[in-house]
Amino acid sequence: MVKYQKSNIQLTAVMSAVCTLSVIVMIITAVWAAGRNDRESLFVPPGFDSNAMTGLPEVPENLPYAPIEVEQGYTIYLLAELHEQDGAADIYFTSPETNTVWLMLRVIDHEGKVLGETGIICPGEYVKSIAVSNVSDTETNVKLKVIAFQPETYISMGSVSLNTVIIPID
Image 1 (tube, helix red, strand yellow):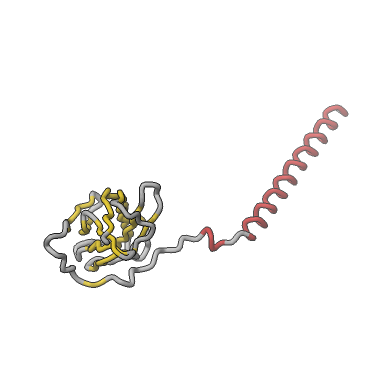
Image 2 (cartoon, one colour):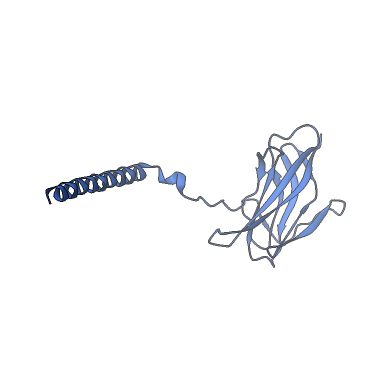
């Protein structure tokens, strides 16, 4: 009987130590989490494009401007190739009024570096030009990534990427 009481006391001591250790770990975790910079972990929605214009753009007929029907149920219009001059490229990035999503566009090089991006545009808006940086003096292969958001909530409604080129103009 003494042996049983002794092992029961040892078990109780071990369980108490485990519980105490668990509480200490929880307190340390709570203090660490409270001390973190919460601004880093919060989603910051992208801004709306200050250069967005309402309506449909007047695109010169000689430019390769076409609609793209996206599987997720929206349409985009843009140029099939970009011509860069003085750090900007005409793109005529358009979201027709029939869309139900907000759109933004990024120009990405072959290494995944963002060379330029628009802000968000709403249905019925377009952006004529996009500022681009670090474009080489020769034709450069790039990816145009269009990202769609559910209005007001910024929930992703998918994205689509298109391979094209930026051609510098002297």
